[in-house]
Structures are given as C-alpha cells and as structure tokens.
Length: 317
Length: 323
Image (tube, rainbow over the protein chains, first blue to last red):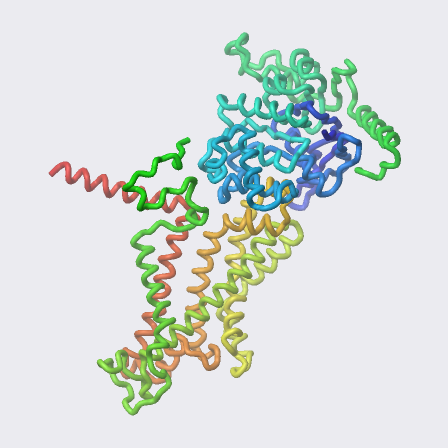
C-alpha cells in the first residue's frame, strides 16, 4: 500500500549539434498522484514524454526539477534502496527486456535475492515457481528452466511482470506493456495486470497510446502533448467528452466502425500546428487551467502536505 | 507444452539416462558449429599445442653440441642438426613451447586490457567513456612494431625477460579490440534487459559481468584468438631482429640463428623451414578457429554457409533425378 506523489516533474535533455547546444524539455511540470488499487493512464503520441516519465519514476534518469515522493501506507517516505523495492517497471518490448543468455528462473530469482525476499537456493527456487504460477505460466518447473527465446511474446511479458513484482513492488509502471504483443493476447496480459493489481493493492501507471485500453483499464487519464499535460480527468470523461484539440485529434485517429473509410481523410480534425499545449482541461474542476497556474497549485499542495506531515520539507526537490 | 518427464521408463530405455527437461545450458549457444574448417583448425592448433607441451619432455637437450654440424634429416636426428651440431627437432619442440607461452600470455593480457577499457568505459558513459576512448585512440595510432623495437632496444638485454616482451606486445595490440568491444557494449547496455537488471537493484559490476559480458563472449573469444596470432607473429619478428626476450627459445629465435648461420645460402632447409612452417600452420589453425567463432558473432555468415550447402545439395539432387 504505497502512494506516489509526482510534483512538477521536469526533464530537460541537452542536445549537441556541432557547437550549438539546445535544450529539449521532454517533460514539463507534470503532476499526478498514484494511489493503491488505482490506475492512471498516460496517453500521447511518440515523443510526448511518456517513456521519460516512466524512466524518471523508476529512477533510471534524474529529473531536472520537480519531485517524486513515494510513501508507505503509514506515511513514511521511501528512500534509497527501498525505492527500488517499491517501484518497479514492465518494459515495452518483451523481446528485449529479458537477457537471451539467462534462463527465465534467473530473471526472477535475482530480484528475490537482491531484496532479501528469500534466502538460499531452495527457497528461492520455490518462490520463483510460485511467482511464475501467479502469472499463469505453468508448468512452472519447465518454464523456469527455459530461455527467453523459447517463449512467446505474451509469455515473456508475463515473466517480465513476475520479475517486476518479485521485489514486492507496490507501484508498477507499465510502459506500453502490450503494444508489442499480438492483438489476441493483449487482453490476457492486461487482465492479468488488473488481477494482480486487485490482489496486491498495486498503484499502476499505465503508459499507452491506445485510447481504448486506456479507457477500459484505468481510472484516470492524463493526455500528454509535447511534454505537458493537456487534458486530465476520469477515464470516461476524457475519452467521451474530449475538450482539448489534441485529445480530439487522438480520438479521431482511432478507427471507428461508424466512420468507415474516413479515418485517413482527417477532415474536421484540428490543425496540428495550431495545437496549444500551454493550457490543460481539467475534468475534475471542469475548467481550463494554464500550465503555470497548475504548477503553482501543485507546489502549494506539496507544501501543505509537507507541513501536515511535519518537518519533512527537506525531502525531494 | 509437452512434459518430457512423464515418459514412462521402458526397459530398453532404462540403460540410457532419461532426457533432462529444459533447454541446453547457456554455454552451448557459445559453441561454434563443427565444420570441416573448424575441425582442421582445431586439429592444427591442438597438434601444435601438444607438441609444445609434451615435445620438450621427450626430446634431448636442445643445446647439446655434437661434432656432426649441418647434417640433413636422418633416422637418428629427425630434423638434422644446426651448424654447431644441435638437434633441430629438440630445438623445435622447445621453441614451440616458448612461442605458445608468449602468445598465450599476450593474448590474456591484451584481452583483459581491451575488455577493461572497452567494456567498462562504455558502460560508465560520459566523461569516463570519453577519457577511455581517447586513450584507446592514442594507442591505436601508435605504430606497433616500431614502438616495440624502440622499447625492446631501450630495455637492456639482461633485463629483457619474457614478461617485458609480453607486456610490450600486449600494450601495442589491445586498442583495436577495445574499440570493437566499446561499440558492442554501447549497443548492449542500451538494451532493456540491462535497464531492467539495474532497476532490480543489481550493482554495476554484476550488471557488467553477468548481464553484459556473456553477450560479448564470442567477440572476446575471437579477439583472444586474434591476439594470440598477432603475439606469436610479433614475437617471431622481434626475435628474428634479435630484440626478443633474452635467453628465450622461440620459433623466432630459431629463425634468427638460422639466418645468422647462413642456413639459406648453405641450403640447410631443415633448419629454417620447420620453424617457419610451424608459425604458418599455427596462424592458419587459429584463423580457421576464428572464422568459426565469427559465425556466432555474425549469424549472417552462418546462414550464408547453410544456404550454400542447401544449394549444393539441391543441385546434386537435381542431377541425380535427371539420371
């Protein structure tokens, strides 16, 4: 039962082009909360900053500014090596996220041992089999001895999920977990994630470009465009009643049986060049919010939170 | 999925151990396919190594002087004698051991150096990578043999031991491999499974040794073999110039003494041909092994070979059908 509070997360990359240096703001003041048993979906096109947020959240990269605060159920903040135990990630490409050299069992045994969840070879092996069975991979004994290339994409992704949960993670970042899988097995993997989320009270950040699964599997949707949140709110509200031009564009891009043959035409779609990402439509407040305004509000919320918990102001930043 | 364990053990099959479930162990993936080329290479290298290992135990003293100088091969002295009546065959056995020793030593040293600078630098990235690359590039443009000659000439002859020569040869030969390893590591370290293992909290050295290194093993093996060839040849060149390790007996020093004893003008082919041939055969054998390792590094080579074989078989089948 852990919660994550992301406040004004910003990431800038320095680009070098000969002698000229430019900075690219990949993520600009993004704030959201992840709560146990709730799923937040990040939706946006390639390059909108979705995966950067995943990397920042899992501490594979450092944020330029802003904070990610993880707290246990009783409110104690999580630091250092405990962070890795709490926040884990499922990668996009199941064909790249497992080392072809090692067996399936190795991939799950390592986090178990690293986080002292088990000790000794026998206990670890039993636990590995248990984890594999939890993600519906059976017979576990056989699967554990196999190497990744002997498994299908869906099976590999299940292994990756088992690995992510092995340290006892309470927060799961799923970076397009089904985009590389066959359409026929996507639902199975997503249902598995949903079941595990219920069983372990996980907080899930679901990153996707697929509006349909985002609506189906998440409670809240954040639409990202060029590093900024341009629309946020309950899943149904965002998908069924899009306000921002970019969200409308996304909705139009999804094939719709009612509009047969009109997908490519793009008539009625807003002009991409004129899309403004400095304002965000917030469905909770039913109002347009400027990005600066939202950032100030998030900062203020963080300050009051810090005052309430008392003295913990030094953390983060 | 089939369960191989549930096969009932029949009486006939009881003698054989039941097939173990699961895949072949990981190291099997690293072994090259047996081809005639690889077999030839292994036989050559194995034979020469055996000769170098066991030969010196079986032959007499290579330095013993007889009163029969410059005699051709005979039943008693298989490869004849030198100008001072030394047994060429005995010398060849000792020289082979010496050359293999230095080749192996330099191979290990150069591989370790290139692995450290290539893999560690690339894994760390940033300023460390830049510094390591710069160092590698500097060593890359240093002309190898002239530097070796200068260093060997600079170190006084009495303190010029086996290790000095090995270190000098290793220092001038690791850079090219380090660049290849760096490129390969840069590609491997950005794969998601490396990020995933960092995410599970693995320490840096474990990520390098357990997650990255196995994927570089074929490259390392091929570089090791190449470094051994280069070292044997380099040492032979140095010794031939009289700049080798003092008091050492290698194939190069044999050629040096043969040259000094006017073996070629005197037509004493048994003196200079065997060591030269042995160097050539060792190089050939190691290169053949290396080509087979290359097939693991670059599976396209293997596919090309298999394709050629299939085409040949198809052609043969067509000919047989027409007849």
